[in-house]
Image (cartoon, rainbow, N blue to C red):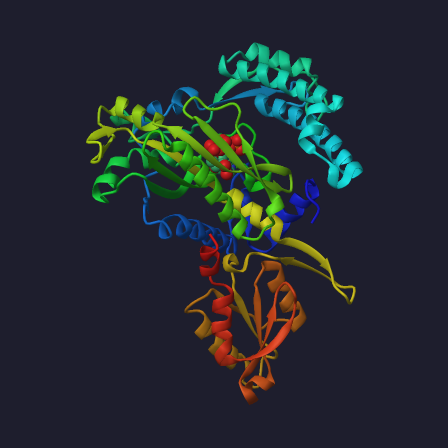
Length: 514
Ligand code: ATP
């Protein structure tokens, strides 16, 4: 499917709604912006993604364990982590359209446009010179590329300085000087840039008791940091070891558009890997590679992923990158991998007055471990999978079908059992097969409408296998099994069909490929 097209996203949003994957939240009240509910199939897909991540991280690694921390945490947690003071985004409003934007995103999008120009030159030259093309040399010598690169570097340097020094007057000036217009209205009539804290707060206890202000966690990571010592001691963990967690996080995003890509309530799957100081770069490289392999194992297309190394590092990081995915809106962050140094544990030591260290029996010294973090948005992963799976096809007979080519092991429904007609003992036989299947996989019975329509319905929800029970089944104990992507059909015995499907949808081969 063609990428980078808003229409694609619209189609996916409407398909997700029509087939029970994702609904707008509280839709009967016209919805709530940037919040969504997962429907009967969405919840299964989400569960399966989470399970694949969890198994790949926790079950497959002897030195990684999981936890499930509370969403509410002691408010000092967020002082220590820096979120109270610094979890801000610079926002800017357009006075004509009344639309709100992130000032940093406006500039990043402007830079991305210049980068696209460079890429265009490179693609053109690559085509012209063929095999003898040397991309690095071309970029270093082509005057147009050099000019554009210089432009990017100048903007980046000023942008970085403005953000670091919180010089929002200059940030606004930069937006004006670059001639950046509101992408919707084209207007250049901007307000001042202001800081906006992304944390949601609420009160714990009744107001009469003197309630205290607490926050909804903006990331799951801090639940791991504050439990570092509990897990290390009770699990008798030795460095290096990791703690994994999945769960909800909340951010009052300034702009939350693009479906489940950016929501105000979302889920993260994070793993903090505690290592000996000085070894963090090795582990950072190692986790970069491991996480990319996890993504590629799903078969969504290797060309759809790329690393984006951060040049502007957060104050606590000594290396950071994103794994970007080719979403319908273009390449965007799907996962972050960060070498966070000892920043978080040290800050929690300072604010709590408790030691959060590791006693190294070899050197007989205690120290605060360094941390390498992998952090992926479950909802973004869901969107990556759904968007890539969504396919509209014209078949040989001229008819068309919409099919979700989901990775089989992750599909919400693994098999549908369809009696060809609703008489002659076929429904009973079909139910017998379903009753067998449901012990190992999520399967469905569908007896309504013509068989062709039932196949289309299963294609649209991405069911990898349809098992059709017909009169021959009663005679010789065989069924037809139809594969979703190729639409090929073959006859197999009832005795074999269950194990054949179990094997085809098993997570094991994916885990083995890691
Ligand atoms: P972005 O730059 O897109 O705002 P971020 O760099 O703030 O993301 P992190 O703090 O690194 O994101 O969070 C880790 C992961 O959590 C991201 O890679 C993303 O997949 C997911 N995530 C972050 N914010 C959101 C959101 N508002 N909605 C859905 N997923 C999110």
